[in-house]
Length: 386
Image (cartoon, rainbow, N blue to C red):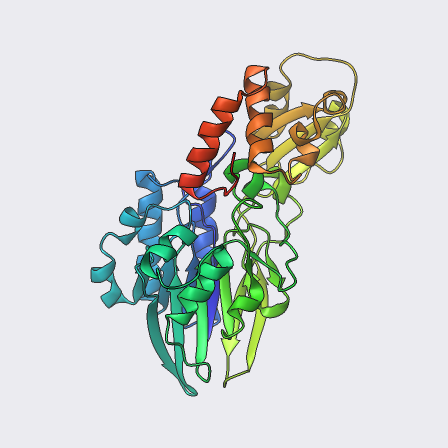
């Protein structure tokens, strides 16, 4: 049994003022070619399919086109919702398209959606667990003691009636740490743009030890958590400057008999890369090695002389320049506002406070912070109390 593990597609996302649909279509076509060439039996998509709960028409069309092509290739799809997705919208038509081998689980309803596939070694059970909140799990299993997200995950697994002797695969979209509680490596976009990581309670990787492979979504940096078979695939594209050093890939998982699982990371090559350039204007615009000038560019200017219309000047050479900042200004700004330090981990309250002060030039009031924390808890992006 072979399958590809994807996550955090964020279809419809933009990079600054630049739409990424063309780049996303390019990378999805590349992934489909890999699936066909490697003779994959399935593609797993671990949530955050769309970038927002109400996706654009173009984003919906892109997903539809991808799923149709995968289905036509005879490859199954196991897809779950993430915290960015709308349960209802992602679930629309799921019962009908299930006949085409596309299985969608968008909402936890007390039992985990399971799909069983077969190969020469017997059955493989795929458990599809969409993004869940501890409070929601508590509603379905009131007799279980659920005080944390880890408790919630254990309760969910306990109600799966799972056979530990069988080959079991879990697809989930949660904040999972190493078995020793060590936090996963975040690229920064999860913190700066989503304000979720580090605030949603942790689920320990050891909670999933009964599974032969755990396909995770939610963290944009590809990585394993302890063993090779518990991992975040990472996003297929770089969605923020803080991901500039990430090496994007798609895991190809091969399952043999029980206990025999191998993972091969296949590199993904984007249509346009994301680069961070640092230097004087002369060095960056007239250097010998400009690279692909169609790449997305973040530039940090080191010279002291102030010029007008830096963006216009840069876009004559790099038309897809996303943002320009200045080294001398970085030295005066708080660390979290420097492009070089965007990945700094902050609590939900600190992120809101910093953003509010940057926009309004004053500190947020206790009443406003209380309201925003309440909204954050309702949205499932923080468990901070007042």
